Each structure stands twice: as C-alpha cells, then as structure tokens.
Length: 220
Image (cartoon, rainbow, N blue to C red; front, top):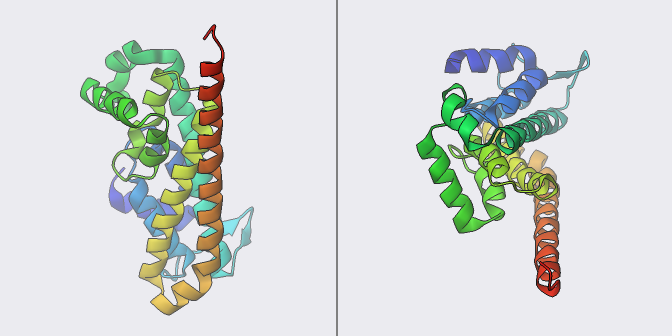
C-alpha cells in the first residue's frame, strides 16, 4: 500500500484503520512506523479534516484520543502476532520457504531471525517487536522455533507497548508543541512504562522459574 494511501486510510478511518494496519504489520512489512506516527498526529488534532471516533462517538479530548489510537495499535499488533505465531508453529519452515514470498519472508530473513533467537532467547521477542524494520519478522520465527504461546504473548505485549506508544508519542509531538506534549502525556508515559516493565519482569520470572524447575527435575 503506497504511503499516501496509508495516511489517508488512517485519517479517514482512525482507530479502525490503525487496528487493521497493525494486524498486518505483525506478519508483513506494512509501514507500522508511519501508521503509528500518523495516528499520534491525528490524535493531537494536527489535521482539521481528521478526528478520532469510537463506535460512532467522537473522542474530543486529545489525550484520550492518543490513548485510543495507541491501544488500537497494540491490540491490532497483538492479534497479528498470534496469527504469525500460528503460521510459524503449524506451517513450519517448509511452508514459509515455499510460500513465504506472499508474506515477504525469504530463507535469508528466516535464517537471520533464527540467529536472533539463538543469541537473545525469549527476549528477542520483546526487543524485536519494539524495533522498527525487524518487528514484522518476529512472530513467525517464534512459532517455527516452537516458543510456547504463554511465553510469547507477554514478551510480544511488552515490545508492542513500547513501539506503539513511543511512535504515536512522536507523531503527537509533530502536531503539538513540546510543552503541550509534556503536560498531556507525562502521566500516560509513566503508566505505560510501569506496565511494560511489569509485563517484562513477569515474563522473565516465569522463564527463570521454568528453567529452575527443569534443572531440579532429574527426568528433564
């Protein structure tokens, strides 16, 4: 989809466009960076012709509009990540090598993703989803390496929160002055940062507990 079409889609359909595009962005390159930056700018009221509505009701408070747009991105990305994980888990590498061109996944990209997982382990999921340019190639390899879904989802959530709120915040900054940005979003940033750290800490605790249990079990 051309970049102009993406911005027009987000401007015309707001939350629903952000959600749909971020579903796709979890498994294929879909300009997720531009989607979230533009979503933040729309929420800030930077475009007179664009506004944020949910279930037919317009959100008139810019801070709530920002929160709605960012959460739509997170929700869409999480749904897309489950789709990608499922494709990798049940389709496996043979399917991706034969049909991967439809998802812009090449054997070279799969090799690179698997090396990323070998190097960083489960934390590759959180880091990958938070990294522009890499995030579309995380969910499918996670399924291929058979990472348990219960371990995958909290890590994916931490990365998606950081990416969506961070990029939407950048878009907001383009549409408002720095002082307005600081005043309206300082509490949102604190809440999101605490939530992301809590999710990541819980995932690491679960991972450590599972490893200790396997070491303690002579049969493992």
